[in-house]
Length: 304
Image (cartoon, rainbow, N blue to C red):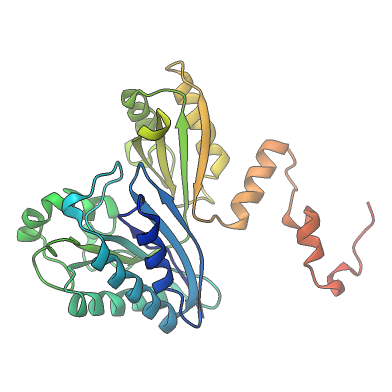
């Protein structure tokens, strides 16, 4: 029963701190597949996989290190955040169900509340309240607004007041998503905001697309930062092309794009099908993929 966890930490400018967090999670039974840092967002995104109990222990250790090193009182970045460990979602993969992911989220959330004295909000599929399903609603007000928020909306676990330096954390369970940023050839946040609003599902855009405008100061550009939470309904190429079209209305082109973390193989297939106009393209058409295929699967394949 393999689960994935994609914790987001509010640190993207100190490689030594990010490395310490990653090392904390490297325990037997858990693979840290990668960790992406972004200095403008001042945020890092880790991807780790493992059995439920091992993965839960690894994520607790990573959270403990983050709480030790990150002080949100001096944190500045373009990405919304309410905690040193801002969000910690569990995703069912091989042999795991969403119920398994929810159980791990609940167990870890309770432990983080008790042992780290972190207020914990359960979100998405693990949410205990309907208005906690959407992460943006849980995080509204950010770190600076936590005291006011908790007066009317107490956490599921932990103290009903913010941790003085680490804030609060959202722990949840969800399906796989694609985190994808599109940098625009402009420094206008107004344009980025208009494009994000057009693409975002909640404001009349594409199904399952969350989008925010962000300023990438170090590159002199702005970006539309997207989460594709239902990529089968809205494939990556469709979201990208809508960003291109909406930006073009304001005379702005795309500079480049960024994939944050990992994406499912199906998203790569969707992208190849769209841009190659080859609608029957499969991963089995990739040479390296074919080389990894068991030899017995080659039997009976037609020559072309």
